[in-house]
Picture 1 (tube, rainbow, N blue to C red):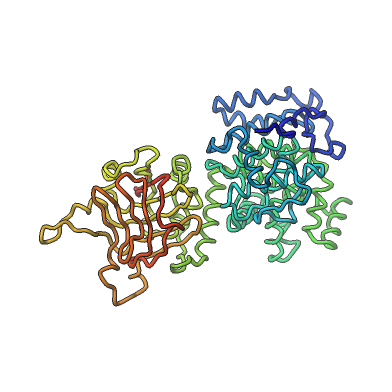
Picture 2 (cartoon, rainbow, N blue to C red):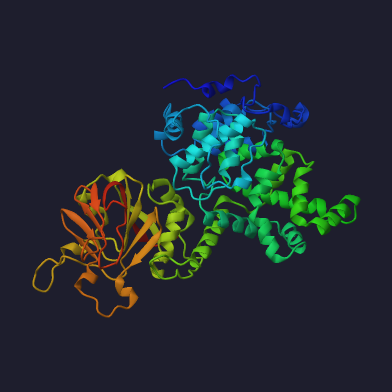
Length: 559
């Protein structure tokens, strides 16, 4: 592979920034005096040692309290180490992978003269480049464009571009790409939402936790404008942080964000609201009266923007206010997020199926189940789990999902599959193909029923009930219930071919085709339209090769 000029970016003259930064434009704070700092600032090597030792809590506290100024060289190594700890796959981290992608997409590693087309998940109005030069902005365009080709499942993610631009202030182009893919692919923590629906869930989550945990500030906001306008202001919560805060404040927020995830941005947004309320609500001072007049004249959203632009509160105090808000554990934020997503899902019409019923907020997978699934699953994220949860029979949602079988751990054998699965009822089968399609079936009966015999002593070919259904999660999300759910009175035999299995294969659905068929080695399969579920083929080609099969059962929650 040819040597890329930008591979040598860290030979820049400035000790902190990459050569794509207009250093003269970067506002800088004077370093804290030794007396106020308390302890010397820690090095990137010290943080890396703690990460290697798995001391995540110590890293968290260190990042929150070490007030590195914006022009400190620590971030050239620190940000990369923090981001890469979240990566799930080594395949796209190989030397030269990014430049191979650049060549594949653009035909050359040279920056094109013409503007680079950005992927549709970007918001053109929020492509903030901060203090990058014109060339630096073009490099940010290229990184985001390559990411769009490499991750076609990202549908809507306006925060990717500004986060990428921030990374480029300190890292090389290749390092930036690896960092952003690490954040996008993270399973254990959420950093960047990737769909419009999840983007909506985030601002509604922020609105809910603000109303509960910074109530006075939230009430102040609500009093200054109509209720419909309040929602519009909360919709922009992430831009309070990524667009409103000065660069000197923002880089300190990102120090914590790259380790802890999106909950840092939630907390900082809440702190902004609290500080804004404190500085604008008092009418007993000249400053408070001025803010009151400004709000009346220009609106509270314009006043909030002005407050952030003129903020005199130092970064360490903003972070102290953010992390000083009590009762905001990760598990609590996760519960609010999940509850909000479930409420939105309950209002959505499932394609090829009936409207999703509203469920009790209590009947959700508990946090331990979610964490377990995130750690072991190659097919299910929390988003997919919640989509499936809304499709399950109500009584099943009272139980917790448990992983019974996965080809990643238990091997590719029907014999092992039956040993681990056959006595569980019901089960969820999840298939991920080598093309990353994800689909499967909710199987209402035990797989052990394959050995039952009818009244004549013959082994029955098919078994199962009408609660069985098919689903697709990627690239399309859809549920395909039994055709008998539609109230059809003239159902034939083909409409009741739910499940079949023997030592050579597994089949779900039948009649003019099989919805899912897998061979005895759990390696190859095929999918067709079938009369039992009236489904389309669940993957584009019909025939598929299995990357991973996972089977989930359901168990009562342990008290």
